[in-house]
Image 1 (cartoon, rainbow, N blue to C red):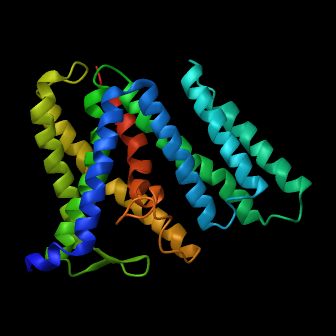
Image 2 (tube, rainbow, N blue to C red; image 1 turned 90 degrees about the vertical axis):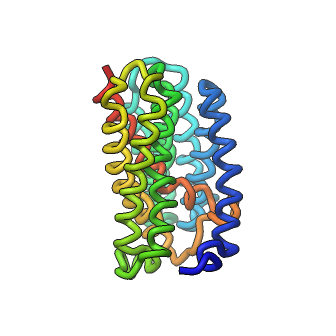
Length: 279
């Protein structure tokens, strides 16, 4: 394996834009509160727009329902203390059905299903980034497990795949992904999680510092494995609609959905694991 192949233009572009993206995320995560809430909210809306655009429905009445649903959902989680998710989910379904029947036969059923799926898939699951950060005093530390499980795994998988990759993992869906890369990604996420646990274990309040390295390694491995589902799911949706990328907002990565596809599924997982293991 030559250094030139590893350090190609595409990799450098991804690295540079990824660095600046990490800086932005770091600043918003450290500040937390309304700053992080606003950032997650904006990212969710952009991601939903990209998903609807791939489906060819970003400017439809159904899409408007999705955007409105996102706004309402974020108002509920920010300004109410009770859990109104069930009521929200039912109300959104009724509204989507209303647009479907009163405009029939303008929209096909796949557009109707994509409207509801899109809100649950992007804004709702993405909101767990805010939940992890806001859960307790350790949120400023446990928040980064989301990215250890997703982005660190993705980077390690890319490097392992380039160096060792031989056996295709999903030849039709994502031809460049290999089993060796996947294994390297999970191992890398576990290792980084363990190192992170060692570094910040003494600062944790809700988690015993003695178990933090092992716990974070396990969370990194599980999250890394699950993150691949999120990555492949986003890819499958693009393939179904014969699109290459969700957008061009992030150079070298594509759109928000191209970069946050794995975060979407790891954020809820990290939240519930933290809730379970916290004192």
